[in-house]
Image (cartoon, rainbow, N blue to C red; front, side, top):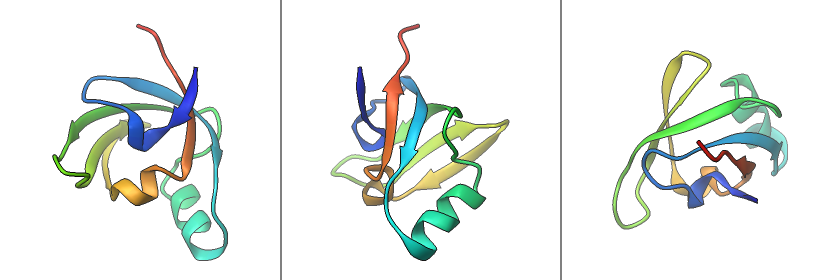
Length: 78
């Protein structure tokens, strides 16, 4: 099942399919290591569409929910 990173709940994980967007935003996301094929695990998610903390490639990263919605993922069933 594919969706976007912003839709995942705490404790869920997925594999990046695509990073939408253009220009500096897309380049910044890719520079942070969010590239197709990367597994991402949602550690914490703030209420009311606040930021979310994710774990990928051995480090923690906090993203705005609007940024996370531009990252297409395939949900992992574990």
